Image 1 (cartoon, helix red, strand yellow):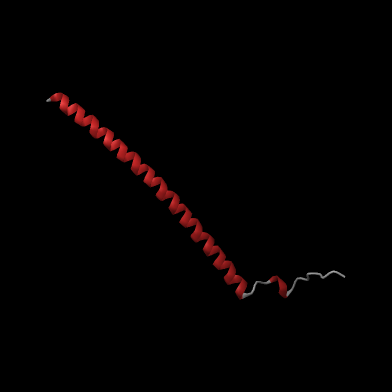
Image 2: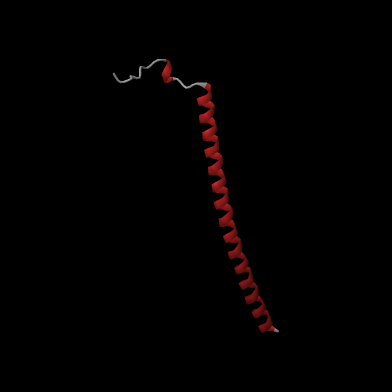
Length: 70
């Protein structure tokens, strides 16, 4: 006869299992935060590069216009 699973003391979670679940969820949260921060940092560096290029272009246009007035 196959083993049957009777509800009783076997449906509870002991302390070790509880702490394992807490640790697993904590590790998952930390990993997700790290991935989000990495993505945000990468996007900010792209924005910084674009702003540097924009600043260079505006400076070149300003210099060109100012030289034309002299």
